[in-house]
Amino acid sequence: MKHSALFFIVALFLVSCGSPETQIDKEQAEAHYRLGLEFAQNSLLNNSLEEFDLAITNNPGEAKYYRKKGLIQFAMKQYEPAKELFTKSIALDPKNTQSYINLGMANYSLGDKKQAKIDWEKAIDLLPNDDDSKALNNLANLYKEEEKYDLAIQYYEKAMDWAPGNTLFLDNLAEVYRKTKNYDKAEEVLTKSLKLNDRGLLAQFNLGMVYKDQNQLEKAISAFDQSLKINPFYTEAYYQLADVQRIKNDIQSARANIQKALAAEPDNAKYKEFILKLKAS
Image (cartoon, rainbow, N blue to C red; front, side, top):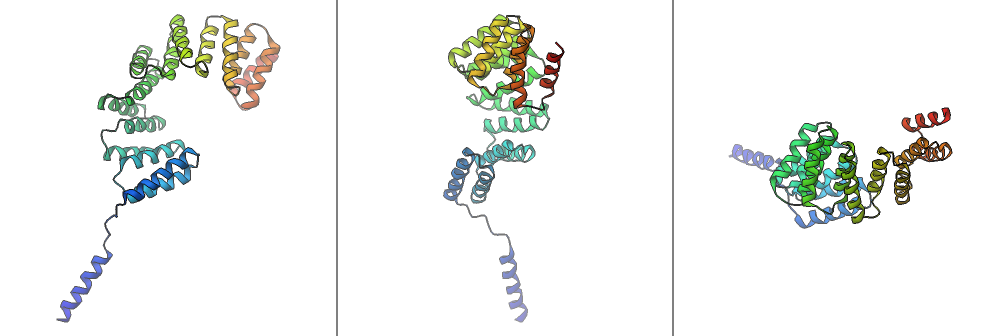
């Protein structure tokens, strides 16, 4: 009888020491999730991570919590943890195209371009929706890096089929046309981009590059000036403007503009080398 009682007590002890079932509280999880989003919008990233962790604790089966936490860690350049979170999000919601796009960005940032390409292609294959345009644009960017310009153009054009008003895609496409010396087409695309957004920084800057490549120096200066009116802290525009002025032998103006670029980026090797060339002029 004593042995039976002892066995009963031991059994109770073992049950009490076992891992308790996770208590799901969806309402509490959503409250932490919303607070995490609010912290993220105010650039309080560590606080945001804490809230997303609490959301996951209260409802570990919700895919979006892992994805949002992954986006914060990606923004903090913590690419490996971000990759793990995007992978977890996909495991919980295998048809979420955005998670594959995010996973591709994490893999790309980790240097695994081959896997990034697979992730983005998976996003495109899943569902025909607006997220496809982002994956298509990312693939086009990858092909542009690899100097596979025909494929890059093809994918940018597909992206614009989904999002015809996206000026970033137009600016990217124009850059490929410029790299392939199809200047008329590049100018046409950038003009379209500026009609959609007349304060498009990249469109104005890229237009300056199109004119510079064709030695249309006054037009290039005008376009670079316009880009600097939109964003006076865009140092590359100061550099390109200075280079055009150097070509025109306007050394004084070139020196003034490269000094502005160097003031913002004093350790930039390209800018330092340029100012040495000017001194030798």
